[in-house]
Structure formats: structure tokens, C-alpha cells
Amino acid sequence: MILLQLFIAFFIPGIVGYGGGPPSIPLIQNEVVSRYGWMTNQDFGELVALSNALPGPIATKLAGQIGYEVAGIPGAAVALFATVAPTVFLMIVLLNILLKFKDSPKVKLLTKLIKPTIAILLAVLAYDFFVTSWEGAGSIQTIILIVGSYVLLEVVKVHPALVILGSLLYGAIILS
Image (cartoon, rainbow, N blue to C red; front, side, top):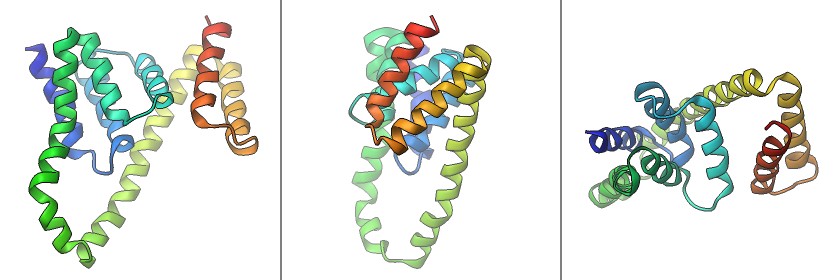
């Protein structure tokens, strides 16, 4: 039963997560945290931060790790398959249709209308992570991490993976 739940939890975001990995993150969070309760918001946030620091697509990294934590190697395999199956299926079946209509005004309008929805989903996810951090680590630590990350990313132009790694180290050393 748990393998079926893992399949559903990662297949749904794979189907409706239009635009790749980042738009799928809030959908995966909903399934993993809210629906099935396999992780807390804080655990999920830490996993997302760690996954962002590693190379490769975020959705597959999340699926592999969460699947493994929930049901071992079979769980990781099922979650990974459920994550990539919709994309593979759609690529095979719909490639000719997409190529035929790629210049259609309706297709361009659909893409333009989807972008704000994705932005809202990501903003809600960021807000949830902010609230979790504020409640868990405290206001001073959260502000230090936000300001420090902003300065490193925008002023000093440090690679995001290094900022994430630094934030993880800061949390491990200062907040533990």
C-alpha cells in the first residue's frame, strides 16, 4: 500500500507540475507533508535546500530521497518512476502535436497565463518556509540568514549552491 501511495504522491505533481521541477515543489510538499504526513514542513524545507545544492533536477532528487526514507530502495524506485513517467509519456505521445502547434497564439497565451500561477505557488512555498524558520530558529537567526544570503547572492555574486551549503553549515553549527 505504501508503494502505491508513493506512486500517487509523485505522479500527481508530475502530471500537473507544468514548467519543470520548481513548480512541482509545492505540489510535492502538499502530498508529502499535508496529505500523507511523511515529513514536517521543516524537514521538507531542509531537503529542498539540500537538493538545490546538488546537481540535477530537483523533483527527481526529492522523489529519490523521500521514497527511500518512506519505503527503502523499492520506495525510491517507485517515487522516481512516478516522477519521470508523466514527462516521458507526454514527450513520446505529444511531441508531434506540440511541434505542429508551437506557434499557435492559443498555446502562447496558455504559457503566458501559467507563469503567474507558478509564481504564486513558489511565493506560498517561500512564505511557508519563512514562517517555519521564524518559528523554529527565531527572528534574529532568520534575519541573519535572509540578509546574509541576499548579500552573498546579489552583491558578492556567490554561486547559489555555495550559499545554500553555507546556510546549512550555519544551521548545523549555530542552531544545533
